[in-house]
Structure formats: structure tokens, C-alpha cells
Image 1 (tube, one colour):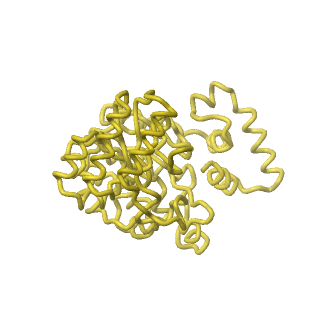
Image 2 (cartoon, rainbow, N blue to C red; image 1 turned 135 degrees about the vertical axis):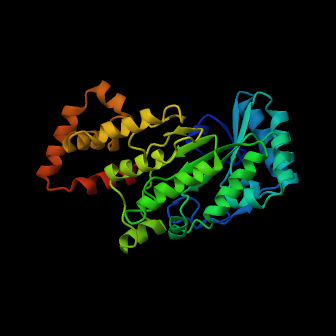
Image 3 (cartoon, rainbow, N blue to C red; image 1 turned 90 degrees about the vertical axis):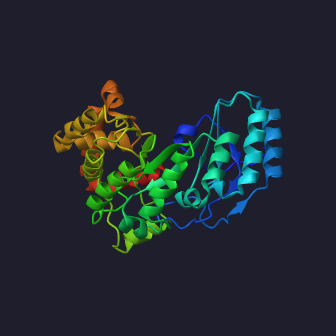
Length: 337
């Protein structure tokens, strides 16, 4: 391609114009993240990015409704340079109605309010922040490089500057030992922030990541799918009175139906989890194997396709082989990434 593109974007930006403003991640030490490892961080100049935008316009035309600024923290760019990029993007792609970007909470916290307001005025509409957890013990365990207080402060700064805020939460990130604190502290952090969106992304310790090393060393024990749902229930119960949109839009999540407007639909979401947890274990396992094998994307999809029989055959086959069910599900989760 005659222009650069980074390796990832949020699931909600799947149809967006991808504009690479920075390369890789300025922190790049998060234990759970398999992306950017070994790749140096660098900022691209406004002239470089504007040249890319010219090439994109010539090749792709003005057909995008949304645009997403890559990579992990384009707000590390000097505000004046980023304003040039945003204004140039808006001029070249007048059909774009929303521009979003990843942002580290530390970057949001260190930027003066007037700079964030300037980015909003230049055309930045929304930032995606990897909150992951509101628990300092969990943040320290996974080398997030930011404290709970910094997370809250940075996210509030974005909101006060008029930006929409989407935060990511990682169920299971604290492992077995920190599950309760992770759920409860993250809920209170979300309540303190009041983001527009909370997006769920279930934790998987990918081979080659520091988190996987911690798991091998016995310093971090992953939650099962059922234990993760229990943690999610505790987290959601802590959001009573919080006004936000919950989204389960990542393929690693077991129940993609866990989405809705809070607090209006909170009781329905809790009932959904309770209903699943009340199923007999064998039925839970049948759904889990079908979901993790990629046969279905949701409970509704599972029931529509009538996968109970196929899933039961798979379970019987695994039992004949002497396979441990939790090990199989863990391997399937890792393969999904």
C-alpha cells in the first residue's frame, strides 16, 4: 500500500479509515498484550500522515463514515501536529462523521485541558482507553504503568474536554487471587469516571507474553469461563446507578449478549448471567465448547443452529481421549486471538 497502517484497531472500528499517526506503543510493557513487543515506538510527522491521507483519498475515495487514529497512543504526538492531522483528515474526507483514537490514560492526564479541547475542536470525537482494571494490585501485577488514580484522572480529563470516552475492561485479569478486588475496584473506578462506553475483553494469557510467563511460574492463575462469568456478575452489580453503555464486542467473550444501556438494562444483564450459571454443568460445557470452537457467536446463535448434539459428541470424544475440559477450553481461547 502507498500508505502505512498499524496492526490493530478496536472491534468497533472495523469499518473505519485507519490512519497511522504513531508507530507501536510508547509503554509496551503490559504483561497481557501480545502486540508491539520488540518494536520501537516512534511518532510520525504531520507531513508524513498528511501524505498518507492524500494517498488514501486517491486510492479509496471519500466513502468512510468513521476514521480511527493508530497506533497505541497517537495522543503522544505534539498537540499542534495532531491538530494539523485532524484538520487535514476532515478536509480530505468530508464524509467522515466520527474520528476516534486509542489513548493512554497517562497521556490524557498530562495534557493541559486546553490542548484536549483543541483536539476536540479540530475533529477528534472519541478516545478508546485501555482501563483494563481499577485495582492497583492488578495494574501492578500486569505492569500497566499507571495507577488507579491516574486512570480516573486521565479519563475524567477527556470527558471534561468534551470527548466521548470508551474504556476497556478485562474480566479475569486479576486471576484467581485478585478476582474479587479486580471486579469491585474496577466497578468503583467506572462509577467515578462515568464513561460513555464500557467494553469487555476477556483475559487470555497468550504464549510469548509476560502474563503467560507469570502463569507458568505459578504467579498468576487464570479463571475458568464460569469463574469469569461470576466475576463479571460481581463487576456489573457494582455499576448500579452508573449511566453507560456496556458492550461485549470482542470474540474472546463467552456471552456476547452482555450488552445494554445501564442502569436501565442492568437487571436483565444480571439475569442473563444468573440464567447461564443456573444451567447444569454439562449444558454449560456444551455451549462453552461450541463457542470456543467457533461454531457459534452467541447463545441465540447456538440455539438457532441446534448445536447441542454436535457439542455433546465433541465432549464425549474429548472424554474418550482423556482430555481435561478446562485445558481444552483454555487452548481454544488462546487460539482465538
